[in-house]
Length: 431
Image (cartoon, rainbow, N blue to C red; front, side):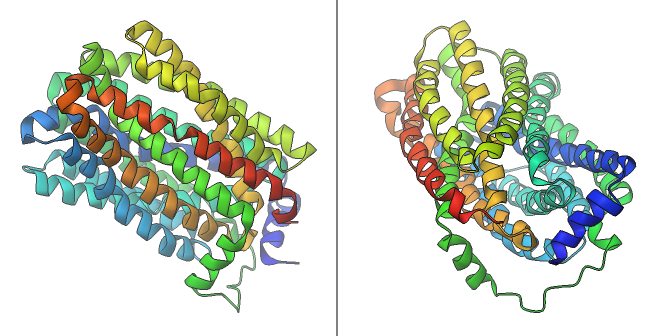
């Protein structure tokens, strides 16, 4: 029996008592906190864009560079070596160290005195956050069987919505009352508590089993080629990367768009946008987890097919949201669009889990996230910012509105890749 099957058996049978099952959910709760502060520390940057633009006299392209490429390059690049470490090392220690690093570097962002210092601190935040996602997914895969994994991934993914709320509501209020520097510090400090919680209360199940490093472990190039040769994996990653391109560009620039095109204050944006993201995220992600767990019992291909369908349905809703001149209508359409967007995530992530061998799960997720983060997080914000600067001579403050609308059209391309992935999922899924 493979090593990871021994782990699953240990957790769900001999160690799978009701008490240990409750502990698995406790571990998931701690990982949810990790995810929450991962996104809070990442997206506090979005709420302080306008103050940063004014203080450092930056263009939208420069802000896109700071929020995207500066963060994403090392974040994406370090994800793979961290995942290689996570596939054989103690994932608890890796996650705890990562949280501590990005927390301190988020605080350092608030202490920056110029644009260069801010870029360096922002890059360092990415270095820390690179150590969170692959090990967390790997732990979830070990603690939860396939018929519960969609819900577990959904709860972990909810950390994104919780982080958005902290960044936009609390961060927005702190920015208005105390300045953008205080907002960075306030978002960073709680992460130190989370790092200690992970280190001293989470167990890596490998430490309780006879885990042995696989004797034949392919080098990184061969492993990446192996993942990419899997048709479903390849199209899932391309679609996910394009979806992240649209999503990260939207998340970074939407608060600035609201301020410029609708004349809304930062405090109002923090409350309204933050609440929309929170409620829609909870509804969408939980519903997506339940839906994916039910659909996978019928046919594993649904994990990729339903995201394709929802993406097509969501495209006109997203376009109407960004093009409307009514702020109330914008919030309503944004809520619906965000529910659909969050509904997709558990299915796509569960589909990735389904086509990656258990012993290679952290690395497989990291290879996919390399493209997701470079294309989505790295290029999405700077592309929207550059398009906004290009359109500015013709549209002025409305340029950002049309830059966002242009990016949403990629939904057609995204849906195509997920549909293609659904056609091969049954053949490519790990038995």
